[in-house]
Image 1 (cartoon, rainbow, N blue to C red):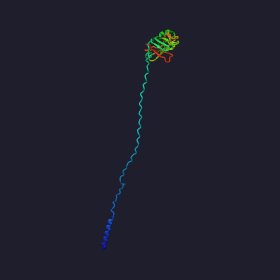
Image 2: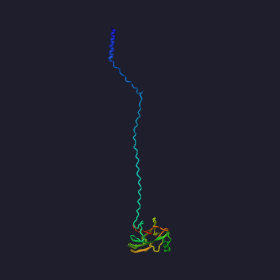
Image 3: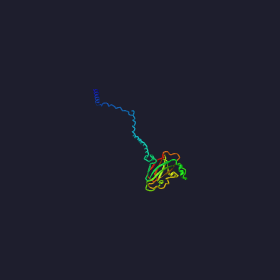
Image 4: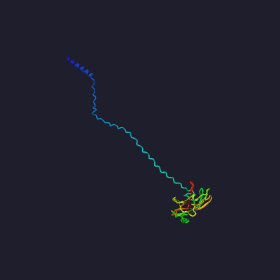
Length: 219
């Protein structure tokens, strides 16, 4: 009888234990992180601000050289480019001049005119015969008031003062001419031996600061 009670008590205890026992707790597996491969992430390089490229200066265009203006050629009547003809009147403030004649080879005539006349230094003597009229208000000397020059085509000038000889009727040493009166005579020039083609005779008043310089064709 006692054994039966012990057995029943044991069953009761087991039954109660079965009712109160908690369900078994499921164990979470522990992950060993030290064994897992670690992925190394390379640091992203900081962006270096790129400097803007320096713009090359635009070269300035080389200016084209400005052509020099061509010199103005005076073609008025009596100019070097448009000389008057022998026999035409050259009008000045105090004189009117007419070139009557021109002798390009006058060495013998000049040397024989005066025993003291030397031979020409440049090669030959030439003579221009002029008629000059005093249109001023006072007596005047044509040899002093007028400058007479032979001009070669290359621009070389041979003034009458370059002639050391005195022709017989030279106007260089002519006496004063009264107002309204005229005188006729020659101006002498010492020229190169070779003929000067297309030479012109230039005449101007010596003391006229702005007076004209007129030219006469000697051809």
